[in-house]
Image 1 (tube, helix red, strand yellow):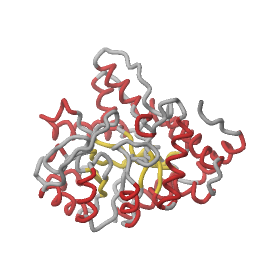
Image 2 (cartoon, rainbow, N blue to C red; image 1 turned 180 degrees about the horizontal axis):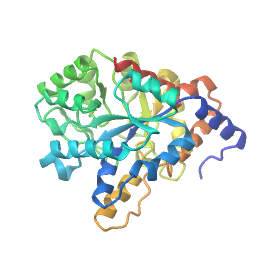
Image 3 (cartoon, rainbow, N blue to C red; image 1 turned 180 degrees about the vertical axis):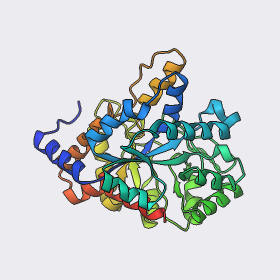
Image 4 (spheres, one colour; image 1 turned 30 degrees about the horizontal axis):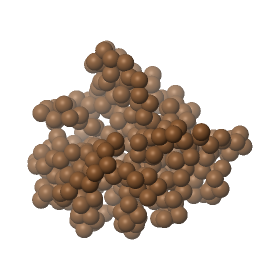
Length: 347
């Protein structure tokens, strides 16, 4: 049974969500838009996401461009198709804008808009052609992880969420060049999905702060998709932030104790590295799963997410407040940390 949130703490959480620009540092939005477009749907963000973004006070969403395993033969084309689909979907929405720089982020606050920041969840699409990062940058992409949970020309990923095995292999020479190019372009580096050897090499290679957009604590729940204490310490030393993942197989809430486990991860992370290095990166995938299933004419029966929608994000905030976490720390976690990070890196 999950924790029961008292009304007073939920009210305080909603107040915070009106005051602070709330950030979700990971959502597979571009891919979902493309899938639903192929099924004949339009206005995806407006229909499926904008009402909940508004309800929860979410002002910035980091949308991944993720190429599925079955599309790797046409990875570059698929990535470009996702980017085009998302841009087209929000073109007529005055309330939603693609964020390219710090000025765009400032305008989000002034105009009460929701911003979408594009990044690559894995760089399979560029192979060893590091110059293609410049093409992605010109298209509005502002960050990348080297790989998803698989091996490519740049790095080796960790195992998938439902697996539990150490995968060996570090960064390639092309992977090291990619990190340097990302930094040259002021694009952020994400280490979620990277294996442990690769993480260690990132620490030795990166000159700028990097982040884990959607990873929890491996001490709290022993998943290779989560960070060890040592990795959390290293990320924090370089000024990075880790976004709490909302997948039950990564949070460890297999008994339905979703809020309890999310709160446990975040509390431990704050105690270990400080509230300045913790944020939200929920990776809510059920809507993506439903879109993919519908395109194949199948029913999606799973519920992998700890939250039913972004409209429930204030419940996590309320759980943190109810646990006794200081209001200022909670303010940093729900948005200030990631908002300031993405604003500063885009100079």
